[in-house]
Image (tube, rainbow, N blue to C red; front, side, top):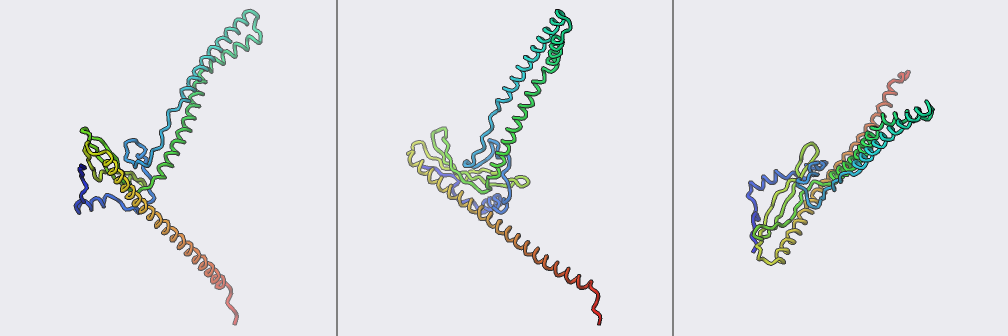
Length: 269
């Protein structure tokens, strides 16, 4: 048999407190989801899957390794050229080729660490581009979240094998300047004993899920209606503004015409 908790109606005082804690849709219009929703522990409706985190880039390790390899090759190559050049200078005098080999070897030895810096700079540029892409994706995801209440149903298993069906409400609340976040609270819990038929538990969970979906859709419609009212008010305001501007333009033209006539010399009698 199912044991139900928190199913009874709350007292009047609690209902008023709940109403105060749930802002009207109009109070949330124009707000964007808070960045705290990106954190794994933040309350978030299940249907709003977080953007997949970007895997650590392998380019940095590969590029740094390549830079270290080129650094070693350049150093060894420069030392080899210096040795070859010195041997050539000793055996054949200060021949141009031997001198050039020594000079080239000195240049390579002096600049061999440059490969490391080039690798680091390239890796940093690639990571910066990747980070910008990730931030753009997160901003788009946050901007697409609408601030209306979600109702969800989930189950959990107790230590004695009982199955609890939990209905959770996720309310949007203002947070900071032009932001909002969700707060989750349990609306009610049903505990079904382990010996209860599984089909009956599944049927009850599905019934609660359908009701939660209907309640969520009702909240979404309320929010969309508020958005429509805001857009209608904005269109009306723009129309009134254009009308005022047109009337002002007509009055300005009339005023300029009157002033032009007033500046004309008076008619002689």
